[in-house]
Length: 451
Image (tube, rainbow, N blue to C red):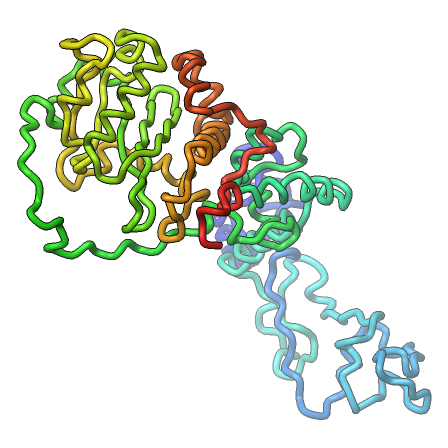
């Protein structure tokens, strides 16, 4: 039963109403059994009863079902397509005027217009009665209630002006590759509805944004298997990773685990000579992308050397990139070179650890963050050899300026908190982009992407 005044009836309450009506109980007696007022029971019985119309016999004059049948004088007005004034609408047999007459009101049996609002049991006129048959069943009543409850909350809950203003703000940002979550993180206070309602409006086609423009609604096709025996001729030598396995990484103190940087590579076409080194600083979700020679361990070491020089000291490098977790790609084979400082010979600047084979989910943050870069550089359509260092910096700037609902509506730049020196960002050409200017579309580097 309802827990307090104003609560809706439950299915169990409706079962009690059905049993009471069948047993001939009064509305007050039923109401006392479920703890509500008698008016609640009478309204429930009338609002959610099942009303079944009598079948239409061929050629029957259905106008007699209207309350105003006897006094109706309408001629040629019940049907919009009819202009005849020779025959009264109620006597017309060409079409059923009750389907189109604006004045039609269904005549109901007087027995069903008062409690219990259903056809009386054992009615002697049941066999030839022309009135609708009324009954009450708990299952049908509950379904009718829930349908009405849902429809009453459906529709557009904003004015035309508010909807137009919202579309004018949201649609251009969506075309730049921003998700609704990111837009609402920046402009939530200016918009009249929440993210869930925005998706409903978009599905209804009234927000000016197509499914193809929403990154979360467009999924990549299932990856094809790489097959066997496709390795490079001659293969590659075995890399001794003792003491640098994933189990060794997990055994690190919690403070070291919290400052891990996940390394990966992002590739373009198979024939491209250039790819991107990806370094994801998990603590602040900041992403560094640096162009390098494809599949080259020496190029990876050179990128880390360049970062150390820009940061100015081995200690500064170690404070940010002191723990690296990478996969087993050939570009990360030279762990000794990656760990060795270029400013302090003989000193280590970081420690390198490797994920287990075929377990890229052991560095999920880096893998997931590539989704944003792939909106700019789609897989299978991007020529990485056409990317300049400035292009890569532009991509990095937009990715790190993109707000995320999962980060409290903040972008990585806001979470960085001075962790990376400004000199490094300046050397790499990375700068924060205003929220409304963030573009996560191939148009950002259109010369490198097949449109």
